[in-house]
Length: 93
Length: 470
Image (tube, rainbow over all chains, first blue to last red; front, side, top):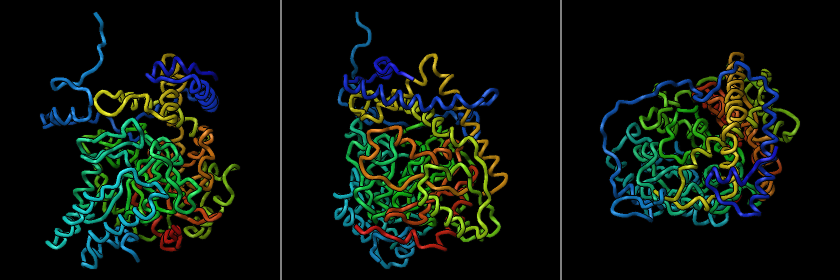
């Protein structure tokens, strides 16, 4: 099993150095080969388990409640402007 | 006995009878931390000032006659794994990404512990983002095993297990996604509980793999484990997976007779590749509980559980760690360590277009088969006992360059996370001077039964009383 780490890293928004690419390609390929073992199991007509205790449709009342203040929400960022998070431009003219 | 060596139960009694104060216990713990933590590296943050302040308040409340019913943990020093959000106390997840992160709210469990009167003494080291089985993936340096500092303490709740084992606190919290509480507890000779999925709220705890994450704790005795679960469990409107089942008083089941309880041993957990010393100690422990020996049960999909877990878990990790972009809080993604990068990439790959069905969906189907194995076994026996880890603690550095080898140390613990069932790790002996633990597994929401069996074993043995020579 071979994995294109450059492509996957791009999808995951990670930057890898050339040495890291070689190391991770080897390690991830080994792990993917290991999990190939699952192909041995016949899973035809087997349901998936995503909620292990079987809960369904857990909802709550839609009530207005107090939330964090603007100051608290912004307290963790180093880049803010006029009470907003400041980010790089996404669309360019 | 020194005050930092107390169990919760002993501290509760002594505080009420005014034999000592919370400030005295807290000081004894802080002193122990100062004396030994340079060597063991169990803590990332020590909250000395806040701890002494809240201990002082606890002592006032005791003198005003505050009752155990209202504040069961009043004045008890507790350490929190550093992935539990704590308002105004740095919370790093042991990663450089969050090395300066200061939460503006408490995790639900932290709020509950505080309301019960507990004194937060510090935040413990762990594998970054709770990714690891040895404690070595921390960006704040590895934690050492107090039984032999050349060995790993197990992970990922490494600092929590070490702080309890070396009496730096009375109790510590942990998280268990694939064994991260039970594994270090067994490597350090302390008791670790992974509750049923949804029994304890995950709100405010740094998410690892959301369909598997269980929130639990590490204690010196089984009784203490029951005491903490009384406070920690219950429905939380902020975590939709928590269940509204009534919460029993978990300490009440402890003293019930275990005679007649059928215990099973899965054939698949005593296989080639398991250290024979470990198998022998666990089998001996089972004989303490079942004079005639336990009934053999089959869990045929066990061999597929580990590869299944190593698809589901990284897939969910990649999704949960996608939120760390350095914009709202924390630093940028270039600060992720190797293990986080590996899991993010693995999960991104298994969830990417064209691979979802072959990997994630397939693994979720196999998860159903693993769960059904347990359901069928629990129609024949009430509880199952297995080793926690297939090996003894290993030397620091031994597996760091071979992630696959590291992943194989979880083979006996991840099944409980896949099936959503509870597991209790209890000390059951020593080999080559290092601790060995067994785990007691039961059906979903059978924590009372696990405590009952664990407590009976503890009463019959002395292993949990052994302390490392620091």
